[in-house]
Structures are given as C-alpha cells and as structure tokens.
Length: 246
Image (cartoon, rainbow, N blue to C red; front, side, top):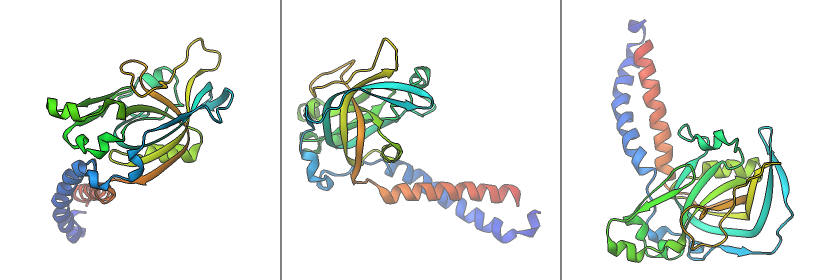
C-alpha cells in the first residue's frame, strides 16, 4: 500500500512540519488580548443594574434536572473576556457532582479604567471552576489596576441560541450580555447559589450569577489566528494519517 501513493506521502511529509509549526504559533496567538486602541467604546461604561422588569421566580429544566431561578436585579454588562472556564471541561468536577447543568460557562471580564489604561496587557488572568485569578508583576501595575472594574460571571443561558453564543466566547472577545442577577438551585433543595449584587466585594460569594437572555459579540478577537489553529491542527492530523496508512 505504501508504494501506491508516493505523491501523497511526499506531500504529507512537506505539509506536516509546516502545519505543526502553525499549530504552535497560532495556539499562543489565538488568545492574545487586544491592544487598548482596539477597545470598543461601549466597554468604557460600568455595568447597569436596576430593579426594573424583574420577574417572579421561575423554573428551568436542563438534562432532566429542574431548577428554581430567583431574579434579583436586571443586569447588563459590556466587557472584555480576559479568562474563562467551561463547565463541561474534563477538569471540572464540581458542576457534574452537583448536577449543575444550568451554569454552562464562567467568564472573567474587565471594563472601564482597566481597558482605558491598557493595564491588562501587563497582567495574567486565569479561571477555575468558580473563581477568576489575576496577577500583576509589580506595585505600579497594581496601583493602575482597578479591582472594581473586573468581575467573574457565572452564565446561565436562557435558551439554546444564547447558550451557543456563550460557548463560542473566548479570551479577548469584547461582549455585551443582558439578563438578571439571580440565585438558583435544584427545585426543592434547601440550598441555592446566590449572586453578588455589588462590584466592590471580594472573595467567596463575590461572583455575579447571570441568567442571560441576550449575548452579543461587539468585537471578536484573533479570528484569523483561531481559524489558522483549527486548519493547521486538521492538516497535522490528516498528514499523520496519510503517513501512517498509505
């Protein structure tokens, strides 16, 4: 079989190292945070939280589990995603353990002075199951950074279309989402997860829990690099398969 397609094998040998290099480069470039000159002007404003149009508690069912959702405030936020966590990730055990299929993703976002100054370019951010961590390299950066212009948001999509948009969101994307700050828990259970209702709290319970009815991309980051990563990864797999089976 190997002698029947020498041309394909030679082509695969040429493509494989090029595609592998493209995978490595695009893997890192696809998660770059945009420069402050590329920040959408709407991100300069603070989130809006009001008592208007807050509905009564309602029930939502996901994967045969029914949850009671209690809206607290109407909420709208414009921000740039600096890190995120998918609840379906293989490293996430908490959501599976608690049968929480409503919170599909957490996004850590910044806005206001943190995007206006560009301080985020000096910093590192990362997420785990329920927490956003950030680090700055020196005290000067710490003085510029504004803690009240960062929040970690547990997102509960209202429908499949919103859920698809939420799952698509990546680091560097500038987004707007709207809905309600809520508490929620399994129907009949004696406990629930609550939401922060201020932007200046810290530690346990400081995250916003948002039942999302609208999710919009204002500016998607690194679209070309993301496409190159997917394409080059596919070429690596195809080249390896060609060299293995022909």
